[in-house]
Length: 149
Image 1 (spheres, one colour):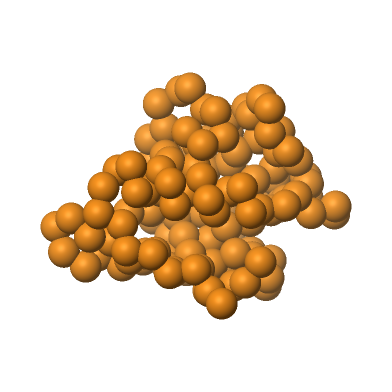
Image 2 (tube, helix red, strand yellow):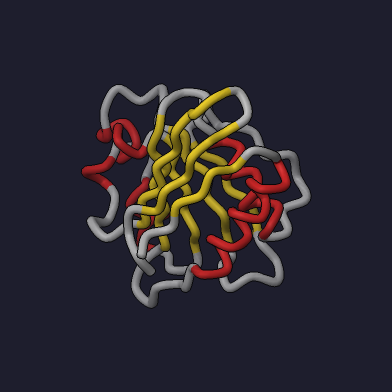
């Protein structure tokens, strides 16, 4: 059964992110990729921040809109790196490819979270985890996992 949660508070985002990330398992031959889909303001960046916190990232996590991606080193995790990609400003997936995204994908020690994944979906593994974020109202966001674990 796919995951589907309505979240109303930052604490609920954190709990949902922690539950999600604890269910992820590294792959032997490539990075674990999570595509974040949804409109502006639906909670994608907040979710990435919550995942980073759940993985012990002490740095402030902001959306890498102008840098396209940021790398965070993880400790005490089954992953070595959290890669946060924001594809919002990309015109097409070729722009991400030019940033050597294939090298990030090839490393099974990477957990890659891609905001605006629909803009670069042709670069993502077909079986990547797909999280849909929906703005319900000022305090409610709906998070749906479209791929079973």
